[in-house]
Amino acid sequence: MSRQRETSSNKITDDELNALILRLQTLLPQLDQSRHGRVSAAKVLNEICSYIRRLQNEVDGLSGRLSQRLDSMDLTGFDAEIVRDLLQQ
View 1 (tube, rainbow, N blue to C red):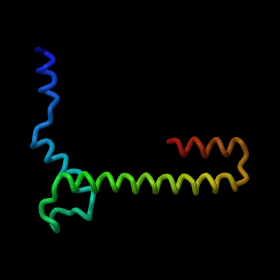
View 2 (view 1 turned 30 degrees about the vertical axis):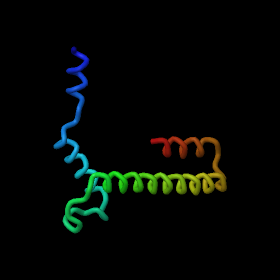
View 3 (view 1 turned 90 degrees about the horizontal axis):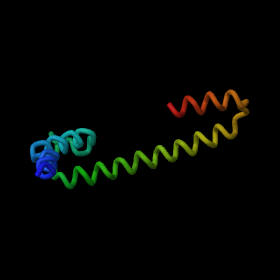
View 4 (view 1 turned 60 degrees about the vertical axis):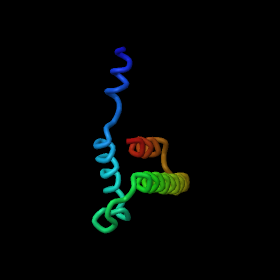
């Protein structure tokens, strides 16, 4: 019985879901509600997923470029350790 109550209390309401979708939509200028009116939740979620993939690709590309630059630099062991520590923060 308590398990059913726990499951029920973990459910998200429609209002909460709509609020979350609107918050996600504000992260995407191309889906600005003032210009496009109401956008479906599915479209917002698809656009957010695409945006995250683009960001991940950009991070991967920048990480690769940074690695190449660091490899080409003449860093002492101590300098390299400082750079690695800075990058991990």
